[in-house]
Image (cartoon, rainbow, N blue to C red):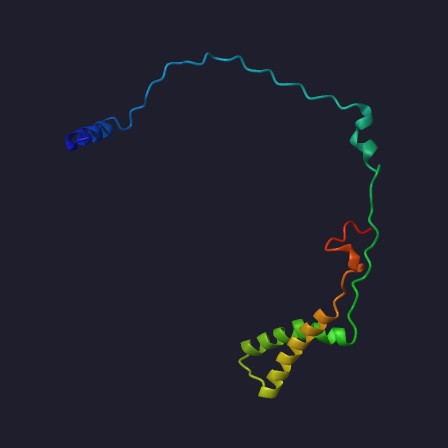
Length: 134
């Protein structure tokens, strides 16, 4: 295409900008579809009749077990020591070097203890999937 043809095409686009094309009515008017009436609810399916039917009330869950002894110290080392260090950083207070090293060792030791004492699979032959345990 040569340059004058492009200019003419652009001029035609700009001149006809905003014009709306007119299309003939191809689709005839359709009659509106009547709305379906709502189904009537039989007396047996009334909501009041089903109010107490089949209601399941789960039993109270058991209390959350509290860690004791070394396990409690390990959990405090895992969560309490980082929180304590964060408070110390916010307060602009730095502990003496042995105390800081003890806190880091407590964190690492607590993590290691919790990982080492994790419960493994109940049945080693069960594979990777426990399936539905009831």
